[in-house]
Image (cartoon, rainbow, N blue to C red):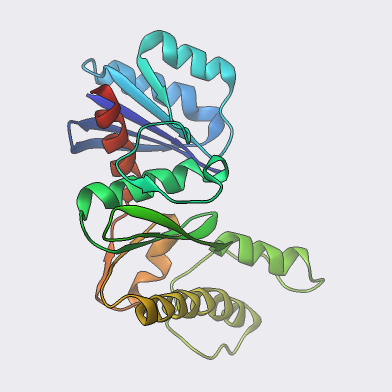
Length: 242
């Protein structure tokens, strides 16, 4: 069994896989992380391997404790992955994006794939039919957009994301929600439209915690998969065992 540890900017996700089957998933704040790790270890005695992917902060002490208990792979741009990396600055490519593209390479071989991950940032990553990762884009995530409206104005309140399909707000709160949510929806539609000018056919994957607020406003030909990154990390770990 594998334990996947995905350290984000805000939360840490821990997932247990038995080969390619997701058994359990836990989301932790940093201060709860090692307690949750220990609980998962106690409940799953057959865990042998761990992969850690971190775009946030995890202490060296915690990593050492994990390494003492399990054979541990720290994901980096040096790790063996199932795609050809054409990014011009591979040393700056986030490990979360590496995991997403790995998932696409395994699940959608010989296809063009656009992966849209709605997290702290919104990332767009494109894998072509030749299994080459050619790059993508990064823009502010939902919470970052809400926070910037509050931080850089005197009067606008700090709100949390909600699902909205409205186009016209009749209060300040509803106007902010529409501006952020529908603004991102139209951003995504715009990117997809631009890609369609370059590529006749491609698969679109929507993932990340913020995708739940957008999926109803997007077309049905988009595949939503909240576990896409975790699955990619598991594929990388399985591949590197060999």
